[in-house]
Length: 347
Image (cartoon, rainbow, N blue to C red; front, side, top):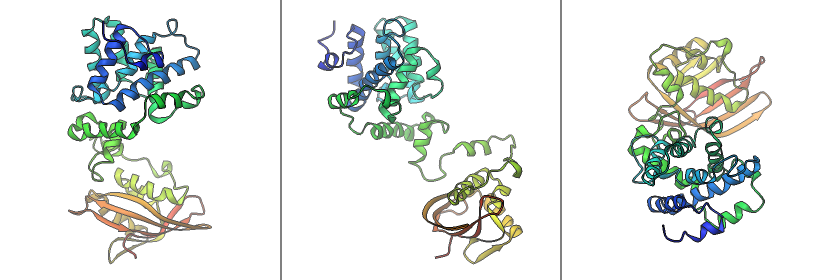
């Protein structure tokens, strides 16, 4: 038998079986304290979710399996667990290997593997067995606060007093990103890890969904003008400009300009009217440019808006070009906002 379990077992009424103690000792050895605390809190919150769903331990779900799933779910972020797969899958494999070494039966191992591998998969984990679904609910509550409204009054405060958060959410994200920076194959662009990694790399260095579509090689084109979205607010004009430029959608970009608009693609070069603007935007697309717009100021008076963004243009020149834009927008009579003046270099 293992040594007497920590006091937290009795204070939180954790499952006190031999394998539960072994898993606790294993997790405490391979992960930092903030992740261990997160894993235990996730179980406590998962158990509360089960109660809220009228699920009974021993009848509707296996409490020991739920504990093992939550306790081991982040071992893929440990140094030992850092392989070449998504951290969730690395963790599931590591947990399964550990449980097999302890003689746990294979069907039970598979439940824990599913719970760990799927704990970030919204819409999938919830459709699996009770332990998988409940584990994800508890883990998500402890990271994002989702579902915290169903917890019993005072439970979160009591658990946090016993198991401090230590800025969990951001330390966890840093751990995920640090793994992905060293091993980009762990961060598919379609996962939250890929989204997190993108924020830590130079703009345009990591593909997003529209980059993947553009590089698929099938020749798919953006939707026709009839199905193209309009900017329903002044803020949406910049967001759609970035989207259409990234997709190489020339007509989408042109749709964001009044027929008599003025566009300044570079200092001293004024494109006036639809044809000239189309040519200027075509050159921008052909250059492989990517654009990031960060809002600075917005003034709206009736159907007219004055907008300024911080623009970072990459890909068109050897070095990024950063400027503060001056944009005058108007609400089109038929709906939607369009540029009347778009000058990234006016100061």
